[in-house]
Length: 418
Image 1 (cartoon, rainbow, N blue to C red):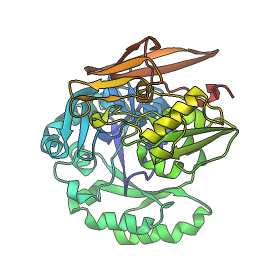
Image 2 (image 1 turned 180 degrees about the vertical axis):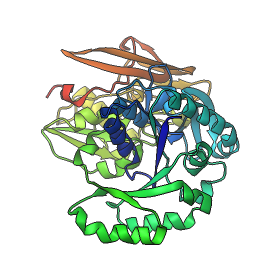
Image 3 (image 1 turned 90 degrees about the horizontal axis):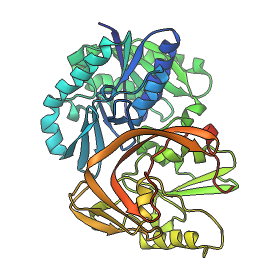
């Protein structure tokens, strides 16, 4: 059997995804066949694999770090939230339906078998599999039938490295507290800990490392410094939006409303990272000005954007706004710019339809079969690779042949119109 190591965290957004990607590239550079794996992921940021399935965006990035094509077995269970209590369930790359939280909990024992099957497939072709946990094993209320953290680690007998985030504060208490709440068998699965996102002189934390080991018995495997460039990598989920919502200045300003269950928002990263571009996320849609993009474009028969925001977007489109600008619609945001979005089969909520912003002469109907395929092309002289991932079928006079959801390298991006 190939070797395996699992990184779990003391909480969400402690940097597990980036650390796994970094370790994947490190060992790949040493000549090993490395594969990433995340048993269960909860995120609306998804990517299409080479074998025509759907996985979390973070695992696609980690596959890139391994220099291998992403496959559905790298993230066998993907939960895409559609409400506070329900999510679309994707198993080994294929949509299984929309389940409420209680239904999902009851089905987790069956899903564990699929998770272990995918893990075995990866191990068969690799020297090393690096596994990423979800959330934190300290959430002991979720321990029964767990498939994301210790439940998987013990079922697959994979050693665990626990990651603490010192940037958010309280890292000693986080690690010691996690040790305290784990049951003895789960605790024994942990081989040590790692401190992430340290700013300043690492030597100043030597006493902190000793304190954690003294309270837990776990050895410390080191301190990872703050990596500013990590912010340029695609985010796994919307947790990071609270930090990136702060406005920045630039010759060109990109404003995006932070809609509920926003999806694949990192498609805007090439604009956000472009020199001279300012960036602003608006939580209150009635204060937003230019464009949008989101999943669930027709939620619950209501307009996805407030009337005030719709007026502002319309003013930008018509030229009535004093400051000139462009309206950009990505994926679901493009569909919102049309006349109507219909969901007759209840794919993303109760059956019904919602009015669009009326800026394009197109209509979108959600269909039961999700389109999942990779694509490529040119933007000017710059080649790109991307994918289609959508339930909507958009038709009309101004509809392109396909509505692409593209991830274009930042170095090839240009701010449209300057």
